[in-house]
Image (cartoon, rainbow, N blue to C red; front, side, top):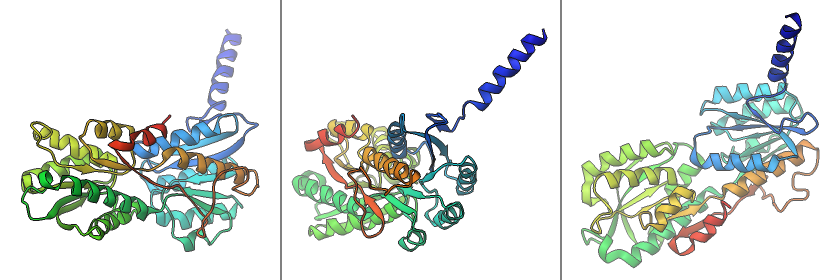
Length: 342
């Protein structure tokens, strides 16, 4: 009996000490890297996370955390990862302003930090020589989205200009207020349409926090209020574009040639299907694969004490950032986006 109890105790001990719910490739001989994602259920970030994890295979142990859109929780996770003796941090910030606090924690331990997807201010990034950023040029996505809208409007003006006033009457679903991508996309998409000498009129703009369900709720209200006065739906990301689409379908659109054109950003697989079906006009490829790869490459090199670019294809700009380019996607070049998920 005592022998059986001893064996049960040993098995229990091994189970609880040999694994961690937040780790991947938990081989004690591999380099340890701490990763925090602002929230796992963000559509786009789920793909970035997948590629970080696949990059680490047989090379590093990841202690990876869901910060659940809670900055206080993320700071606690950073403390825990530091206590686990990780050799570098890869942080997708909940709040970009928290970069100051995370840098202070890392600097105390002489620990390198790769921020990704949510960009801290350059002055903050430059305050510590062991910090870098992986992401995009936020305004580029807005410019490319504006070009998609301008080109498609020009080609379809006769059937899309419902009131024949020569203007695009639009509603805009905005991401998280203050998020660099949300602010830049909102600004530059409209500017680019105007640069194409197309007049616009904003019927409504509101945040749906990057979320499909919230976007559907907003769209329900706008359809009720503005009805067929809406001539275009602009969404800061595909998740919200898909929410707008579900609202339109519920309201009887996409039957008998009754449509409202929608454009998003990210080129999520779910959105690509709807583009192929003709229910979304276009999107902008936000390259999750290469953002994930670049984030891991820099974090891994930094953890080994190497130049962060050593042996990689990436380049740093003057702001200590690797910029992954955006690509405009319509039905004509869907294969480019589809290949990014292979």
